[in-house]
Amino acid sequence: MDIHVLELFCRIVETGSFSKAAKAAYLTQPTVSGHIKKLEGEVGVRLLDRLGHRATPTKAGDLLYRYAKRILALRQEAQQALDELKGGLKGELMLGASSIPGGYLLPSLIGRFRAQYPDISVVLKVSDSKEIIEAVIDGEYEVGAVGAQFDDGRLEYQKFAEDEMVLVVPPTHSWASRSSVKANELPTQPFLIRERGSGTRKIMEQALEQHNLSLGTFRIIGEMGSNEAIRQAVKTGGGIALISRLAVASDIRHHELNAIPVAGLKLTREFYLITHRHRSRSPICNAFLTFIGAPTPSG
Image (tube, helix red, strand yellow):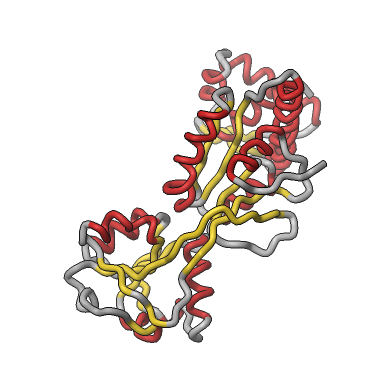
């Protein structure tokens, strides 16, 4: 298989479009279609279905896509190793992060990292923790950053930061002037929570279990896909929430939200860099982990 054709194939899967993939590669659409037809002839199976203007991978296409991403990552790793041997690092690091590390912790770290390694570009994609973990396992991201540990022996976790989750209410809420609340009072209030697969939600559920509480007993009025959405909803009186202090620090300072301790509820959390335990790391990945302070393999 031609590695450049595999790149084209991956672009089509990721964009859902032959024309967009052609434009990105500075090729005509008929040329791209010809390359894909030749690739399908090589593997002996249809890889893409065209549904109107959208191209979607078949089951075989999904399978090839995962392997193609690994092949392309290995090519990049080899080039990085050769660049390092010649005395310099350059290339690209694919990094995925959940919303808190992606929005509040990593941007400044990446800026300082690039000041030290100006020939390295870092692509940071933000998603929920479950999607980040799946992408690291599949080889789409070499490094991930999440706020909870998940039970998967293929992953290696290294703590790199800490945070605290706080109960926030709007200043007009009846609890706003209280010095603390009890955990068993939480289910009495309209609550906003993160979606399933979120590290924030996982930490919240684990903390509630310490008091024999579950979200099933709460008055859940909304599940939202980001801390920013929850933050804005609480500010407008849409409910109360347990949320990262990093996400609401400015609101608390400016008295736009009130943070209330929950007696006896352990709400500290740790953030982890994750890598695939059984996959070799590129020189750029090792440089990034060393910069952050995470250990790298000795050999």
